[in-house]
Image 1 (spheres, rainbow, N blue to C red):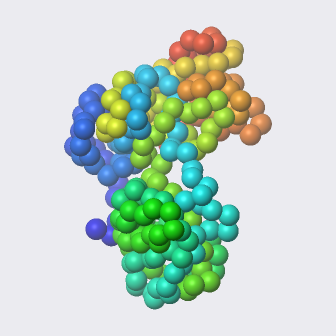
Image 2: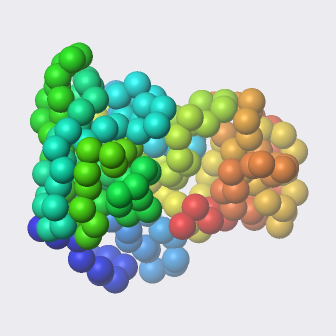
Length: 244
């Protein structure tokens, strides 16, 4: 199905308080409770989540997903095409990037982003094939280069002391390894905190901080929201999240 615009989800296919071993909704689906807290649907990585800790997208693979200069195009693809084959050797699992994104970084076609429908499995020294959800708007040639990423809500991991991916939310409860569920991205939330927090002050994720926690914001902080009350280091503070 091609990408379509849609409003905020009002009725979910999976209860906010439960997780599942099977995918019930598209990754990144957004839903709100009646009190204004926001949540995104996600797939967990290989370790069960910890309630109140901060999570990020799967770390980038600079060898197979975003090599220096980008992945090459093996064969030109006309406007309207949906299959892109790399001229660069990769190591991918089948559908590793399904629901993720392809971004053209070297012209022709630079600046355009496409949602990925599926990809073939590859091993070293083999070429990968990517099927797009939407047809190309600008033709690609063998001079084009592109990079790919998993969906940010696919196989999330606890945010390390220095983030290696996009901050995507806070776990509101324990969700099993490799399970599907919801991360909180907006509104009142209990969050692991490092440092001294002051009500109304901005908080975020710091380089060189404590894994899975937020801290008082400084320059270059990934902003996460504001304190709703005084925060005490190593405890779980009450934060108004503004990830969404």
